[in-house]
Length: 66
Image 1: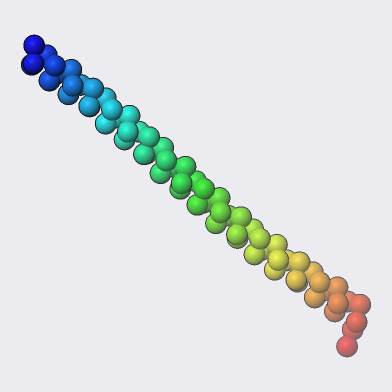
Image 2 (image 1 turned 45 degrees about the horizontal axis):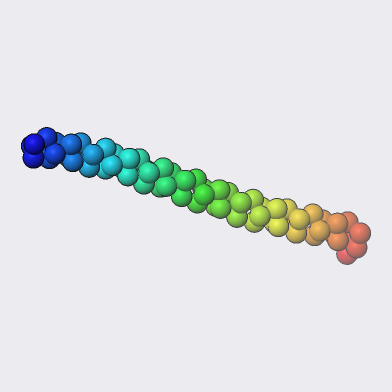
């Protein structure tokens, strides 16, 4: 009976380990996607600010020629 108990426990621990591994893998994937999204948003913000600054400089140069 103890052998059967040991085998059942081993199977349960293996199943739990597999589920836990999948959970952590998914968490890492989500974390990586969030990181990529934050980087993309930061780059977009920088590019937008640069574009708006250039457009403003162009408008000023056009309206106030030297």
